Image 1 (spheres, rainbow, N blue to C red):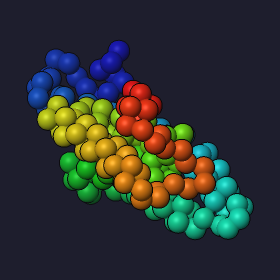
Image 2 (tube, rainbow, N blue to C red):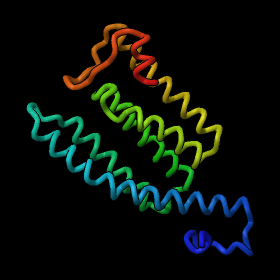
Image 3 (cartoon, helix red, strand yellow):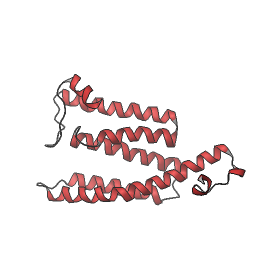
Amino acid sequence: MLSRFFHTNPEQADVPHLLDDWRRIIFKRLVIILLAIGLVPYLLSLNYSLVVEPPQWHRTGFYTLIYLLGLVICFAEKIPFTFRVFLFLCVFYLLGVFSMIFSGFEGSGRVYLICFAALAAVFSGMRSGLWAMAASLACLALLWGAQAAGIDLQSPYASWPDRPIAWLVYIG
């Protein structure tokens, strides 16, 4: 049943190549699903960014570039698979950082950063996943450190804990 879903023949399976083929197929389908599901929040964020006073052009431009990059990742088959995975992971990391800066801990930045590490492990291997987790933790630590040092990163909607123990509990 799975062999039909992934268009493989188990009798002729060369395991290393089969795993690589499955990664490619799963990656393509995952990106299509995320683009389809992500269209609704993208359109809602565009509406919100342009309606709020003053208009938030930086959000509109950022989300438009991210969505266009997602379309390129999905449909540009001539780009090597490893580079498409790299771009896909960069999208998750950038979404996480952007969301953490502009929404604080109320936003979805932590979810993007966790997904960044998990997807890096799935599509690039365990070592890449560990490096991605380290990058996510470094991002959280740098943003908290900047806030603790008095650098105002907040939008009016962001909320950052002011004490280190509260921060640890909050991200926990």
